[in-house]
Length: 446
Image 1 (spheres, rainbow, N blue to C red):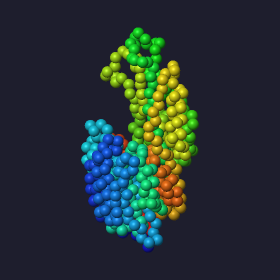
Image 2 (tube, one colour):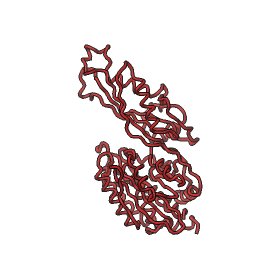
Image 3 (cartoon, rainbow, N blue to C red):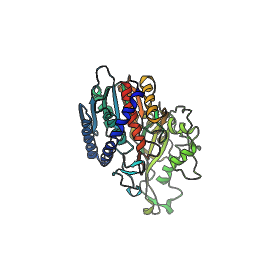
Image 4 (cartoon, helix red, strand yellow):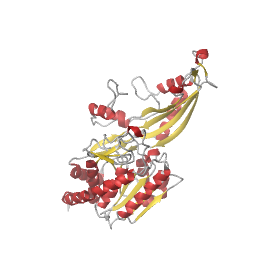
C-alpha cells in the first residue's frame, strides 16, 4: 500500500486522538519547567513524559542525567525486523513567563481562544513533545519503524549537558533518521523544513573608569564615567548601516527566498518610521549572517539617579553565530573586539557565557523524499526550505554523533506563535497537521 493510500486511515486515527493530545499538552503546560529557574519542575515534567511514553506503548522509558545537568528522557519502541529507527527529538523545558500582567490568560494554564491554544510551552516545545507521542499513538503504540524518543530539559539554557548525555547513551540514541520538531513553519498553514540554524554565544562586559563614584558637577567633563564609556564601546559593535563590525566573524550567502517586508513588519511589530538594521537581503540578515545585540545592562536605575559619575557599568552582549562558523571562535572574536575598542584607557573585563553551535542541514536522500510526500498529503503542499535565526545546538551534537543519519528539522509553530514572548500559542489546525505529517513519515520510512 502506498503512503497516499494509507493516508485516510492515518488521518482518521489522528483525528480520534487529537482531543486527548490537546488534553495532555494542557497538563504539560501546567508544569512550570523553566530550566533557568525551576529544576525540580523540569524533573517533574520529564517524569510525566516518561509516563506518557509508557502509556503510548514504549518498551522502556527513563529519565537520564549527566554531569549534574538537568534531566532528559529516552524511550524506545523497538524496530520491527529490517525496519529503520527514527529518533524523535523535542525539549520539555520552557522560558520564564515574563511580566504575567501582560498575558491575556495565565501563562501556565493552557487556554483556548479561537483556533489557538495559549500558554508557555504550547509552541516551544511541549507541542513538539506531544506531536511525537501522538504520532506514535496513531499506530496504537506499535509504529512500523523503530522509534526513539529523546526529550531534553535544558534547551532554553543552551543544552550544557546534552553532549555528555549523547556520549553516555550513544547506543541508545543511534538512529537512521533524526526528526527535530523545534523550528518554525513558514506561515500558519504553510509548513517548512529548516536548512540552517544560527548558533549562540554571549558574554558580560564590565567597564571601570573610577575607584568610586564622583560628583558630576565637580569632575564632569574631565573624568570619564563608566556608563558613557560602556555605551561608546557598545556602539562600536555595528557600523553606520547597522551591520556587525566585529572582525573574525563568518557569514554565508542567504537563500533566494523572498521574505515579504510587510509581513516582517507585522511579525516584529516594529514602530512606524523605524528602519531595519544592516544591509543585504532580509533572509541573509536573519538567517545566515551574525548578529550582535545588547541584551541587558547594569547601571543606576533612573528612579534612583543622583548627580554622580558611575564608576562601573556592565552589559550582557548576545551573539548569534552564522551557519558554518565556530561558536567558541566567534565568542573569542567578540571578546577581542570589546577588549580592544574601549575609550579613555578604561578597564574592561569580559566574562564568557554560554555557547551553542550553529548548524547546516542537508535535506537530501530517501528520508527527504518521504518527508516531502508526507507534507504534501498532510498540508496540501510541499514544505518551504527555510533558515532559522535561532539556535538548536543539539542539531550539531547529533550530526557529529551520528554522521550517517538523515536529519529533518520540522516545526509545530508559526510566526504568530510568539515563542519566548507574551501570549505564546499553538495553532491547533497546524498541530493536527504536524502530528499527521510525522505519522505519515513513520509509515513512509517503513
